Image (cartoon, rainbow, N blue to C red):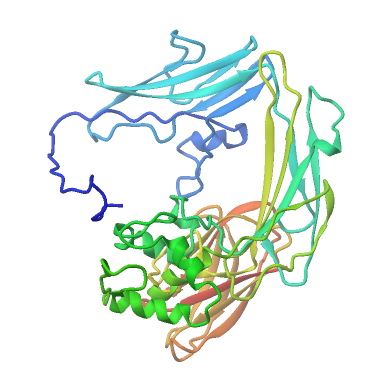
Length: 459
């Protein structure tokens, strides 16, 4: 908080220093299935990124693939060299993405050092544990593992195996389940704004933090205090939204007055206030489940478009002599099968206005990442288009990936008039994929061709 009650709040002079900048080292352990992505000739157009794995474990001999994806030098004209130390001070490799086999049990720190031509260097460290292989934990299901539908249950089975433990005691498998109406954490501590409600993002990009914190009194009351005071009041949303725009004081103290915010739209302020008021609402309690069963998905409500069901399964093994007990976890997150495009993982060519996206031009797209396509047969789009016919094209895995569905749409005559169009998948797709929804009009004029409001996945 950089406000009146913060002694450290001050103006700071920033000077530019010309010269060489230090290289950046980013080390990671690469899953063998993802190793091919390190070859820059593969998937050049894909936005899927390698998982950042900083620790691994296994039994000797243990071959580990290392990666330096993301390392480099901020100076464009500089060149860097790589040094890997796998077991100590001895340099084991100078390749960007090497492999190494550990033959003796132990806990090792693998260090990557990236050095530029001037001798400046950056480093990063990974942990390799040799002597105990982690258990394997997997939540399997005949259902789709990305989406939920109204009045449809979710059947599951948790499979666990461990080389050292042998027979698995089902009582040691922990399985819990919960519904969260606002993913991303209701405490607002998640720095990744893309996982937060729109209201959180709007607050994060405003001047609110100059006077308010999540749970402590600052110049103004905490967000949690506001939420508790107005919890259950029918007129709270309208009243607080009006106050944010108009400004005012006297409710919490007589000394400070909240500034007016006439530059904010009523729609944006409503989203900010909705987020604050939601903080007093407790998430549903976690349910402890057996390793196999069927769950009734009936906790969600129609006005919770971002609500998710989360199943977590974990198992901790008995450990080894050198490496202690290891825990492995698998998580399944189910989101609503009717996805509002404003809550997509990314969108290019669309602009957000309040709780919706603007119209977009030819080759703009909506991106949903890591989607389980198992059982999905059709897409249903809610859209509007003032005066231009076009088509919606679906590609998987990259912007240049294979087309799995395509459908034409007709102009609805007005941006406020919604239409619906269904597109069938031409070839069955299973497994997880990044899914791109392109809006297309190949002949000109092809600007401002369509709005996409909702994308529904249909089995």
